[in-house]
View 1 (spheres, protein in one colour):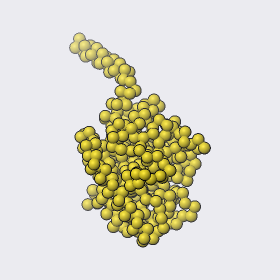
View 2 (cartoon, helix red, strand yellow; view 1 turned 180 degrees about the horizontal axis):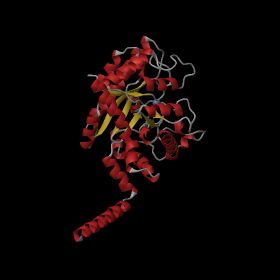
View 3 (cartoon, rainbow, N blue to C red; view 1 turned 30 degrees about the vertical axis):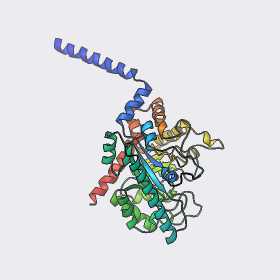
View 4 (cartoon, helix red, strand yellow; view 1 turned 30 degrees about the horizontal axis):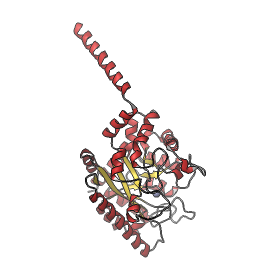
Length: 362
Ligand SMILES: [Zn+2]
């Protein structure tokens, strides 16, 4: 009896110690602890455009992305897009788009090499985790606008071999793969036959399918056609901010039912109405986040900043300010487990399924 009582006392004291320890943890300490423990992933930026055109004016901000800023903000990995503006659907433009995408990918690889003390290119979850362990950040290659594929299926393999692990089907124009969300006249009624074949090839190889910018029909069809979950790498919700580029409830539900993730952009134009949209802050980001969580749950949201391509809001203007987002999630009452899911756990689930499916095809 005495021994049992002693154990009970020890347990009570231990519980009180743990409870008091938790209560004493400041928000800043919790932010630091979480960033050390969890994997954080941002699924979209346009840094490559600034590498290619250092003096370019794209009507958007630059200077929001770098390996150093990733370290400063506690970001472990990011998808760096090779972006192409949409042109005519013909062989000449397809050749140009491919050469352009190749150039951006080359510049990103050179950037990684030149900054190898801070980070490196990653092509798998395993490599990303090894980089975090070594104190380095991971650069994943992606494509924004699959017009660089033209209508040639072998080019999916070509880009996989280049290290590309995510392909966004369109930008703001229809291409040979799919219709875009922002065009008045649709070409295919969603995905083209080539687009369906390209998705099958992406599934086979282990490339994540990204539906940001694609038309509603293309998104819904992709959830049917793809063998693995799909994502939106940088989109927001139509119900909170009506834009043809934002996702309707039907699309959000379809992506979630497929096991996918909607990565909310930190993009003022996508987040907020009105002439003062540039005053968008983390408040607006939270409105969209809560909306999706209420609709489909915590397992289907993530972060896709669109930095250097229109992203940046008050409170989180570049990658170095990502601790502010974590702090805000804590202040909103999210648990550690929920924050880990939002920051990368949900995406890792998708990426793992994409990798597993590809391995099964070998
Ligand atoms: Zn975009």
